[in-house]
Image (cartoon, helix red, strand yellow):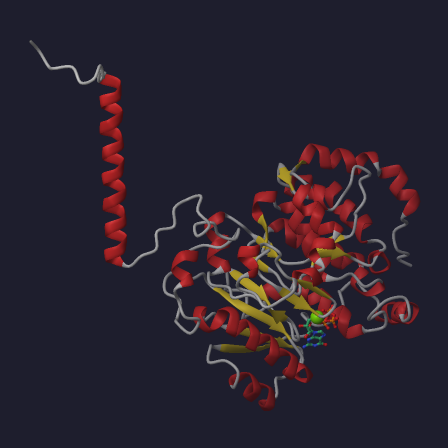
Length: 409
Ligand SMILES: Nc1nc2c(ncn2[C@@H]2O[C@H](COP(=O)(O)OP(=O)(O)OP(=O)(O)O)[C@@H](O)[C@H]2O)c(=O)[nH]1
Ligand SMILES: [Mg+2]
């Protein structure tokens, strides 16, 4: 007789397998839901809104449940927040530290290293002590760190200050030149900095707008990132008239110090010239092995000998940036889009909805989404060393006729 037929329905082996599979899936979902309810956890499955995280943010789900007073557990790097500052800038630095503490460091507890060309006053130390309970280390610069490049003639430098007085901001400021030289080639060797692996630069009067609920140092280290920035912009060409000339000289002499692939595309077009794009170095988070590398030291020494810190007004921002892009590849440089930040003059505020959720700023006011250099950063890819050297070569004759080296007489 066999199995009686049910209304002509014929269960095949395929339908039977499908039914078993569906039943197993349903059971799995039920078990997962029950477990998550029991543990009180929110399940954020890939593809759901809750799972999506702002680029660059790690541990978001955990961090979302943390209080911003709760100390951050886990690993840290050997790093510090470093500021060069004057006694007269106490109020501005208190403001910067207050904001960085509230947004990040009250939990993560990195030490501050404060450097000055003069002794810090007791008033300054008291003012800082009352704004943070984190460790603060105070250092002073010596004459080699705060002074003229050995090759520079002070008389000629003073004449250059006079000449540049009304040409651009700080055109006639000698201390600004000392500052730029120190920040370009010396700060990472200061006794309070030389044992650090990482630094985060801070300046007076900057503002932080977004809760940073992860450790950007650890984030960078874990991804092999070496240079982090928030704002990219153009430099005033009048301040760096011969910087690219001397950079090209260094490249031509030291091809062996260049990597096979680099982000050089970001700072130069196919014409072989510097487009003045740079990372705004008043904020930077850097793996200091970059600045301590043979290549960077050699580049700085070459520039220091050329005298442009004094005869012109070379800033540490274009120098750090040119070096970072010549020596690193794109995977080693990171835009911290999620860190809303302002230094007087320009502001960044993330427009991504998930990032903005933790910020108190207005993205329509952000300079960054209008910045040609920032847009270019999003578009460029690595350049091969062979191509870089070829472009430098090809533009040689034209370049020499456009940009004469400074008069060394
Ligand atoms: N100790 C000390 N620090 C200085 C001196 N000049 C500048 N700095 C610090 O160096 C950093 C950069 O100087 P700033 O004056 O901020 O230069 P800038 O950012 O290019 O320009 P503004 O912020 O627009 O003035 C800041 O942290 C300053 O506090 C100085 O003569 N002595
Ligand atoms: Mg500043």
